[in-house]
Every structure is written in structure tokens, then in C-alpha cells.
Length: 460
Image (cartoon, rainbow, N blue to C red):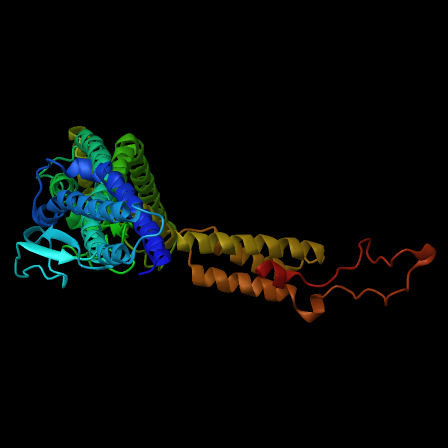
């Protein structure tokens, strides 16, 4: 090496020494390293920390050898401004040759193998020594950074979730949900056990929850792009997130039970009201059935069902659940009661409609007869003997008991046909635009002309 090459090498190695020292000082103050020192570890974390912990002391020892070798080279270079050939040869050996003596028992083999043969001492170059320090730094910083990331992310969140779990358990007790009596309480107990186990795992073996973005560095060997850089990866929070979602689901179900507790009295009252309306409707159907049997002839009237005794028994069971605070049992029963009570009311209304159908037909025929009677008056046929006879016949059939609906319907039809006979049609109005004196419409028999027979409209 010439003088310029020596000076450039000394400058580069000096900058590298400063960078290594800054990185080691930062590592010494790393929160993960402080937390790991003296901690009771297990599993993967204990295995990797056993290697990394020895690497911390080894890094400082290697750095001291590096600094000593660099100081020796600087001492030779400082002897004179223009070093002699012998001094340049000595500097070349110090800077590029295998001039650094290290303990082979504490330094891994350059191949990076974990079980390489141990040697008492080894001669290596400053560049090789820097590579060895880079390797050990990657091992140590990856462990302490990953542990710090896990311990920063999970324990506090687990404690918050455990506190929330305690509040949810109190809510469960307030609505009668207790272990062994309801699946939600069993879920809460299981969640408590899982969260406690997860917290213990995070404290003792945090690396079990660390997912590196690359294969972790082996002892004394670093990847090409990781020297003096923090490793990358992510904390595995999937299990914690699942527990949080499950706790949210349980809380929602318990809050629905709490709402049920507040609304149960009103909902039971509504069920009772629906059944009371169904009873009144069935009573009306029975009364209508008796009237049909008495007033309508030759009619098959369906039977009226009895009161829903099974529903009343279920209501009694629901009241018992309400009084004893068994809200988890009351909820599904009350939903079924509301649905059954609504169906019972619909069934009662349908029964009333079917039973009262003959009375509705008679009422419709009576209405049609009155409408045709009014039409007869408009047509001036109120005194016509045939019309009067047919009207009286239909009226007698509709207002007598028992009423023969078929005969009454035929009588009303004959009365309508009498009004539509050609010889009983009203006179036609004059063509459009032809009027009587003074432009007034033509009037016959003191009444205006009709617009046609309205019987069809009245008949619907």
C-alpha cells in the first residue's frame, strides 16, 4: 500500500469504528435489552436469548480488539509525515493482513456453522472482524427488538381486555348467566383462561408471538443487508384479536338479555292483550255461529275453535322465568309466545270471517235490494204491479228467518230483471244540442231524462 491508500484505509476504518461504537451504545440502552436482562424466560425466547446474551459481551470484546488494532495502525502512521517503505509494509499488514488475534473459543467459525471446531486463538483481518461483529449484532438486535415489539404491543392490551372481561362477567351475573347454567358464562370462563395463558406466554416467551419477515440470523452471521439495522417483522395478534371479537359477541348477547329484562313486562302484557283480543274474537264467532244457525237455512257452519290453553300455560312459564331472573330462558320463550299469539289472533279472525260469511251474504243481498228499489223509484216504476210483487217476494225472503240465501238471491235477481225489461226503460233524451223552449232540456212527466239503468253498477 502507498501512503494515499493507507490514509484512505485509516479514514474508512475510523468511520466504521465510530459507527460500531454508536450502534453498540444504542444497543446497550435498548429497552428490549433492559427488559430481557434478568427476566425469567421460556421456550424459543430462552433459547435465542441464551445465544444473544453471550453475544452482547462478545461484541464489546471484539470491538476492543478492533479499536486496539486500529490504534496500533494509527500509531505507526503518526511516526512521520512520509512513512518509509518498511512502515508502509507494516501498515499494509496491520490494515489488510491477518494481524488481529482473537480467542477462538469465543468466536464462531467464518462459515457460520453452530458446531464448528473450537480453536484457542485465531488470526483474522480487520474486515473479517467487522463482519463477525456485524453478524453478532444482527443476532442480538433481532432478539431484543422483537421482544420489545411484542412486549410493547400485547401486555397492556391484554390487561385492558381482561378488565373488560371482568365487567362483562359482572353483567352476565346481573342477568342470571352463570357458569354451568348458560353457554355464555362458559364462554366467558374459557376466554378468561385463554387470556391469562396468553399473557403468561407473552411475558415468558414473547418470541413465540413474533413473525419475522425473514429467517432469523444465526449465531455470528448476518444477512447482507442487515448489518447495524433493526430487523423487520410483525407481532402475531391473531389469537388476541379473536378473543376480543368473541368477547364483543358475548357482550352484545348479554346486552340483549339486559334489554329483555327491561322490556319483558311490557312484552308479556302485549302477548296477554293479543290473546284477550283472540278470545273476544272467538266469542264473537261463536255468537255469529249461533245467529247463522238460527237465521240462515240449509247452511253448513264451521265449528269455532276453543281458547288456546297451551299458550296460557306457556305464559305462566314465562312469568315464572321473569320472576326468577332466568332471562336467557325467557328470551326464546317470549319470542315464540309473541309469534304464537299473533297467529292465534289471526286464526280467530279467520274463524269469525268464515262463520259470519252467510250473514255477510244476506247483508249484501239486502243492500242490493234497497239499491234496486231506489232505481225503481227513479225510473217511475215504484207502483208497477210486477215490480212491486217481485220486490215484496225478495224482501220477504231476506227478512224472514230462517233465510234461504239461494232463493233470496234468485228473488233479488228477478227484481233486477224486472227493472231492465225493454218496456220499462225510460224515454231516451233528445240528440245532443236539441233543447226545448229557451234552451232548456226537454222534460217529460215533470222529471228529467235518466242516464240509463244503474242496476249493473249497484250490483257491483
